Amino acid sequence: MESIGIKREKHLDKLSTKELQGVIDNYFKHLANKGYSKGTIKIHVSAMQKSLTVLRPDIKPFLDNDQNRVRWWSAGREQKKGDSYVNADIVREHLKEINKKIAETQALGGFRVREIAKATIDRENYEIKINKAKGGRDRTLYFQHRQEVFERLAGLIEELKEMHYEKHLRDYYRDIKNACRETGQEYNASHAFRFEYVQKRAQELRKNKEELKDLLEKYKADQEKKDSVNDDDRIDTAIDFVLTQEIGHNRLKMSRYYRY
Image 1: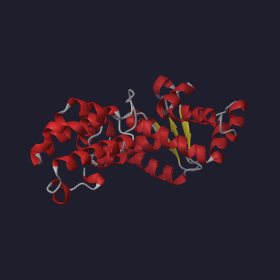
Image 2: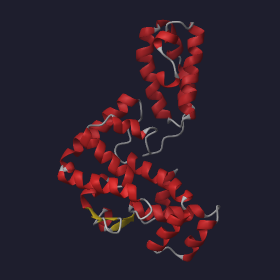
Image 3: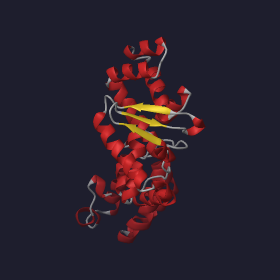
Image 4: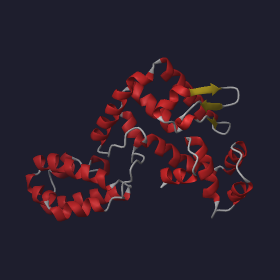
């Protein structure tokens, strides 16, 4: 609750029961407005029932009330199978150093976790190729318009290969789960960082039409998709085509699934 300015010494020790009820209501409205899922809000409700009632026993009936709890979590967004974390940066901050590097690599490149080992780096041309990924397909990521991201990502890939990161994957998943528990977020495994990549990348491509046009050429898009770049009602078709290539799928609806 400190995230919205509620502190024990300034508020919890001084508020009346009714005033504290109002603070709690506002807290859960705050979570829903920030886009937290129903499942994540349920986690926060449960945590508050366990911790806040120790400090303020008078608030227990309010927190235990079924109508209140349903009202709070039902305001959250629907959680689909797989999604980005509400605050992925905080999740990563809670990870061990090697696991933090793996998570950042997935978020910067959209990799499936085992694809990092299959990546080759072309520093001269600012390209990263993933060899024999899912379905035996190769794919190339182009970073001519994102050279700083390329340098960071290339360095992470080289470090992780040297560290034989694949031997640490069981601990990686366990570490993410613990980080979610500590930060009050619903666990979506490591695939959530791929969702994060797609969602952020879509915004980048919408803003940088020159890069979008360049990538449509490189990925050999048809003329209809190229023409859609300058049409606000159709630009999503071009974005989905590029993202589908970047994340290693062959159907446009997969990009839409990751984005929405």
